[in-house]
Length: 205
Image 1: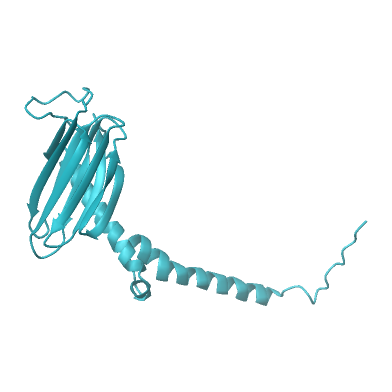
Image 2: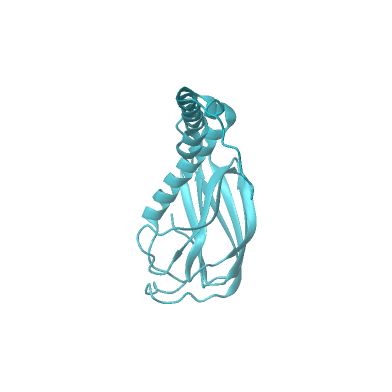
């Protein structure tokens, strides 16, 4: 049987040493909170270290995109419409058809705009958009039919982009698309090209 030797009292840390170690740990945790966590999560940077390390910019981006998502959500309509047809009830599924469209819009400084396609669950929509004259912040998201207040489903978002492309796969029946905001001091033009299984493309904001 293995018998371990009990440590002597001289080998154990004293109460004073334990108190010092606790103070050092709390100080380190507070420093990390102030220099990294607060700047990165909330853009709060009382020391300026977070901006130097790039964490404050991350927090500012999160806050800005959150504000734009909230502003966008407040303006979203709750019905689905098809080109050349009256508004459909909120419980009507969205029909998907293969098509191609080009949508162009100009944004003044600080202006935002939203374009969405109506598509059924699983529909694949190819997209490519580009910005002439500057860069924009964007948020790609969708709204299901009869979406509850405050609902948000994101496909991707970013800041200071000159363009993006890819394929959007509809997560549900409803509207899916892009919100852009011009954060520059000059007008910009956004050109969106879409193709695939959707029944309508429309500017909502």
